[in-house]
Image 1 (spheres, rainbow, N blue to C red):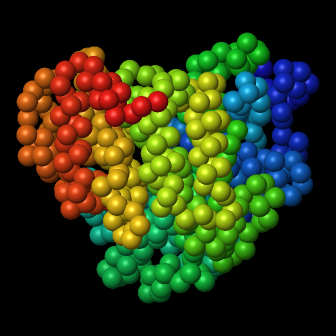
Image 2 (image 1 turned 90 degrees about the vertical axis):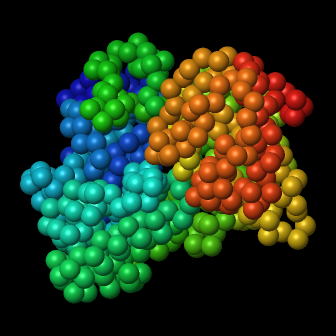
Image 3 (image 1 turned 30 degrees about the vertical axis):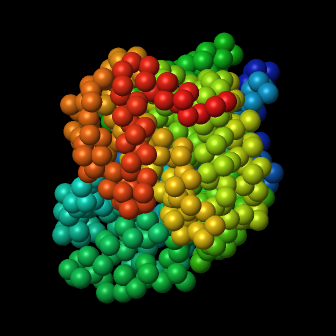
Length: 538
């Protein structure tokens, strides 16, 4: 059994092994898609393959769609070259349910994949052709939050961005520069409307994409490298919209235990690829069953009835409420808490942490007691029920191979939203007192203790990637377990950094408590565990 067009011709063999196969005429769908594309997605990673691609597959199976997806990758071209193309754009989705059941699906809704590389004339020309087609209704993204940034961790504009802005839209090199160039192609081809939809897990994601695209449009038009009117085109919501979205589906890195299951079924060629950019990709993805995608219904060129596939369309205000509910309270802060302390305490799976009474109680307090009082109920999802599902079903799922090390990635970019918004809400409230927050400050102290790259046993470990490591780690680099320090003095540059925490922790009155926790956590080996047990009573 081989995952490609030829290998899937023996449908009976796949179905006998328990695989759900595409139920549509893929050749016909491919032809229709290439002729009149309606959806192209940038970021051919795991969550796209496990979520959006599967939604489209279900709609194709039911006859609700007659065209599929086009995927493009603009950061790591090897994902497409070494994974998509050899497998004819098929993926195996392994859904790991909390009850122990496993669902195996061959997803074939992606019918074309391309690299977003302006130096690759054939591929870039094809992308321009797609963007010039009036049928294209939506361009979506899962490129991570930092993918939209035009600056480095210190706020300086990235050299590639500067070069692209000066050179114009012909052959840009930066990710957003290339996307803006394709949008310029659409503008010069007649300016048909389009929805540019970020589906990344970050606050007000549409605004981040809007800011990046419009920065290029303005620079190019000001310099005369783009025709007059391009900036007006991308800033007119009736022409180009940038909807807000909230996405939620836990999709860990492809796991060896899942690979073993597929190998036992007789599938060949499952070896993962680690690209030269250190991306880990495999012919399969493993994911939880739960999934949410809430989208602001702003599509100036129309859209298919994707709600039939379970996507939720609503207004911007409701998306904002759902996003804040999830990102600021009901999931992401709890994940970050477990990631930080999981790394320090030597855990290799998030699910195992939920068997630790102290860590379980900690996230319950942060979710229910500290976070929930400032959540606005969005109406379409109940916050209390959402946390219940997260803490009782999703995170403890023993079949989900998700690691604290993965979730600890880019923590400096997450703290302001995941905890800072709650702090701000307490500071503004007439009924709540920010000094009542005792456990969110504990996470901040834990993160700074984590930055020492020494676990609770005193052993060194590798920090997860984060764009601010070079900025923040030097402040704690000389601290050793057992040192007596003036924590407020040593940590002040971090504690007062509003970009990290969303607030200046001194102004919020939380800095002394953070420092007190940190001092206790560096007392010696075992001090992190001792500090948690001292303040968190299961």
